[in-house]
Image (cartoon, rainbow, N blue to C red; front, side):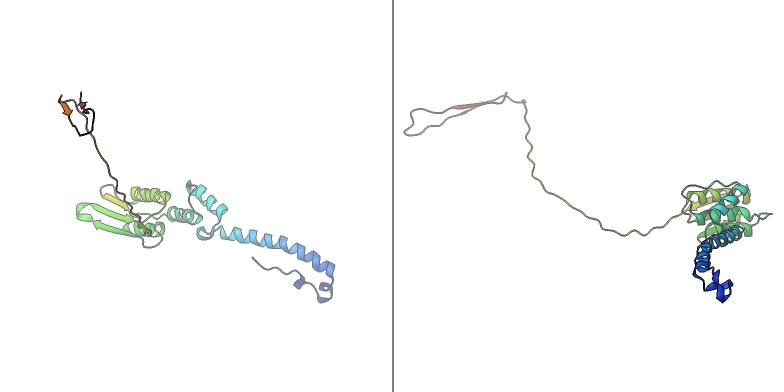
Length: 203
């Protein structure tokens, strides 16, 4: 926030009046807003410094439709990739575009020209950048060269795994009618007036 002191522009014998000082203090906020607006216009001239309003203007100029999940920094990167378009397309142009798209050196290119093949490994975290990578491959790399593109995301996960177990006793009973037998149980004893007989039928 730019500091604005209107009282400093007044002669000392006028600055001592409280009414004038209070009036200028209120007007200071209006001038601060004006300075910020002017500063915003200046920043929006450059892609790297453009705010939400400025970057949307660049996107309309070159036909980019951003995603709702794209951050302002990602949108600036996409505009830079499209804006700095150099022809003829050579290998150095491909490297420069990947440098912008991948934020430096988070990519690897393996050339196999004897097999008419080129392999590109990236670590792009947004879907919009992946789509832009496909556009770069289609517009820069010749059609007679096979392009293998792999996007690898590495993550370090930390946590705990809990393993539990239980033991239970189970008894299975199988009832069948494959056989038909009678079992007679006989028994006797002293002092008993009769004999108890039990018949078990498995039918």
